[in-house]
Image (tube, rainbow, N blue to C red; front, side, top):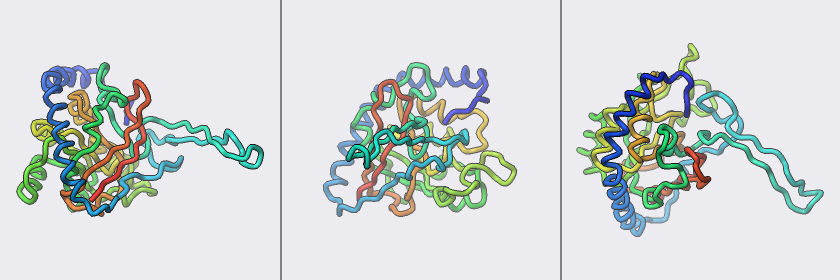
Length: 271
C-alpha cells in the first residue's frame, strides 16, 4: 500500500521514530523467535483444522490505488504443447499480502530477509466489528487490546495480532475501499495501539482491510511506526471470523523475491 500524497514532513517526523525503534529491533527479533516456541505447543495440540485466511487474487480484487493487482498471460498452450503455463505479473501489495519493513523505510528488512521464526506464530484476534459497523474508519485502540487481555490473558511475545472488522465481507463491493463520496474508508490500527504491541514484543499485525492504517489516515503513522521497527504487517486477511480470539497458530507463506518490499502471501491458521 503506497500513497503519492504522503508529505516529506511526515517522513521526516517518522524517521526519528525509526531511529528510536532501531535500538530495540534486535530485542524484538529475539522475542519473536520466542513466539515460535509458544506456537509449537499450540500446533502439537491442534485438532488439524486449517482455515485459509487468504483471498483469491484476481484482477478484480480491490487495490489501494485502484489498478488491477495481477495479470496472467498464457505462455504455453496445453493443446499445442501438452502442458500449460502462465506468465504472471503482480503488484507486490495486492491481494492478501505482506508488508515488509522495507516498504516504509529506505534500508529496512526486505521480504526475503524476514526471520522464518516470525512467520509461524500464535494468532490473537481483536474483534472491533461492532464499532466498525458504526464508524468505517474505526481503529484498534489500546483499550481494545486491554479488553482482549482481560478476556484472554497476555498476548504472547512473537504473536501476530489481527484486527477483525468484518470488512472482508465487503470484498466485491465499492464499500470495501471507499464510502459513498469516494473517500477511502476502512478500519485499521491506531499508532497508540501498535506502540503498545511493540512494547509487548509482538512480531506482526494483520488486518482484514486494504491498509494497516485506517482509510482516513493522512500520514500512515502505523506504517511508518511499525514497519521500520523491524516488524511486518499482513493486509487483506480473509475468514478471521471463523477463528476464536486465541488458540490458533498462524503460518505465513511469505514470498521470497530478493529485495522485495512485500508480496502476495498464502496465510493459514491451524486450530
